[in-house]
Image (cartoon, rainbow, N blue to C red; front, top):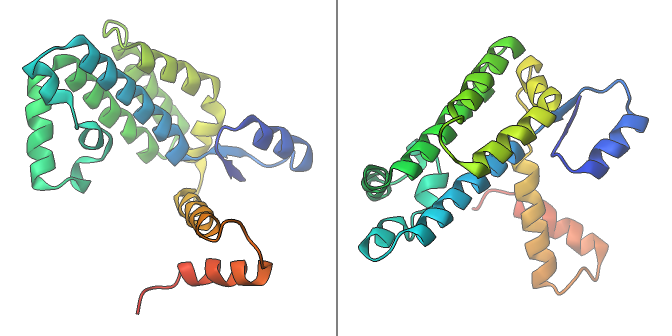
Length: 194
């Protein structure tokens, strides 16, 4: 199994070097595209509204993109207020939450049924970014459906976080000067604080 994001060079390299490997697209990257679609809807709503109605939308990006259980009490209250005030954002938010269930299915058929119902519910919503996201999922369905078949639910979240830490270490040092020292800094950045 080859777990990756949807970057074309990864796919181009995997096919000749590991033709027997099943390609699995990482949940983190797929959901990031859905989050970007939701953020596009939020920005278009902000531009469409005026005056005090804009105040509901301004500063709500994190509340819309994060999961319900990860929000503070004030974040939850602000989100409820926003969703009650703006029907389009409410619909977009509910669609985002609905599709997050896709990753819970153990069989491809049930996941496909969930996605087809989700895609069908977009029909009258006029949410262009969500329609583009649905087309992207459709094109890459085999790599997404492989997530259901997988025994171990693998996420690249840890690797992405580690890559970010490495970039920060390199930026602080103005580039790596000593490879051994860089290796030591990378190893120590993952240790728990004392």
